[in-house]
Image (cartoon, rainbow, N blue to C red):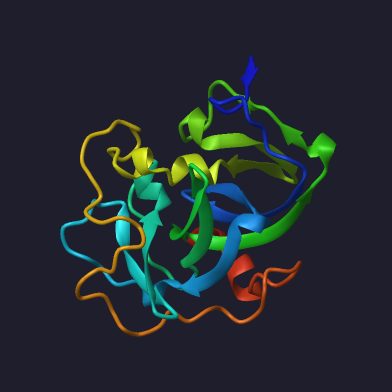
Length: 210
């Protein structure tokens, strides 16, 4: 038995930026990706939920960074030289907001055609079905395509890690300045998001570090 996302939406053919998270490869539509910044630019903020790893000061705008592994209940992301933050654009009721998501390592820019996207199976995936729009065929394994609007919705950002309930709360809305945040601007990784622009040293991370 297979199923699409909770709202019936399916991923569309196109380009996806993929990254590694807790041993799995995930993808986000390339049009939602703004840039990639170094994880060293993230500043911890006391009193925030454990899956909010901190904030970055991106050219004068303070933005939160979500540890996706912690949000999915997979444990906190360990910091290595491969760890990066992908700045993505989520849309909530017609309002676009930029947030960062922490990843174990960047992987690739992937082209998926109409016949290369499958529905999500009803079992055997490491995250909630609601978080996924489909599975992309990419040798040697499938890529899990995230519904970033759902993953980063206000309801989900107020939920306990891995549950999607409404317990707990994020202390400040995504665009609110955070007192004490670092004034050092986040440093974008050189290069854009065209094919091949994902840094080679990250894409080629040794298996034991992935």
